[in-house]
Length: 111
Image (tube, rainbow, N blue to C red; front, side):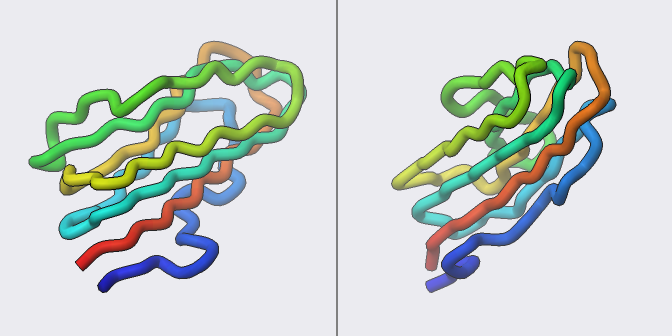
């Protein structure tokens, strides 16, 4: 059984929110998946989304996306029991502002 550990792995670590970011995570044989994102900042604005793919090329939205507003810190946790896609991608699309950082953690259990 594969497990990234009690705190998961960091796929984005305090990256500047002045531009858009994505991180593709290889998740074959994953049974349960959790992705946590948290940000800080005073004027960063944009949308944070989680996307999945079977082929690693064509990604589609998984669940809800979240608006990052220029009001300071925030966080989101996506939890997917019985997850079956081979890849997952965390996407941050900036719509304005530049002061802030984004960190994304992933944890999974699988065979």
